Length: 128
Image (tube, rainbow, N blue to C red; front, top):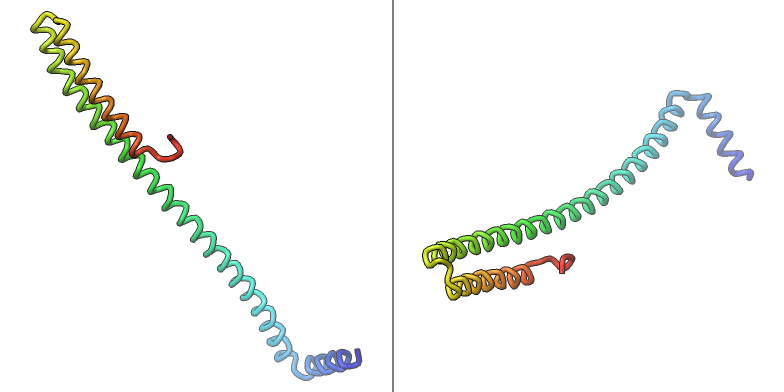
């Protein structure tokens, strides 16, 4: 108690002796406190930025994978349509005999089965 009173008296005497130095010292302490607060905030914001960047990268990769699957689906659908066109032409030319129609359906069924295997292989776990 006595030591603190002495320090206060000395600080008061310093204030009276050199008010500019005492004000500068008080300003330095306040500036250091503000600097520590800013450093803490900066560290917190950098950690948050790193977390958000990692989340963005994960979402970006998932979107790339989904786009890849969509492109594969589109490619297979175009393949199915391309295989179905000759079947339809053959069926029209042959007045749609049962064997031609069966062959066309078999072609389309095989193509769709390939699509299902492709989707199962590339689909994200959340869609399975």
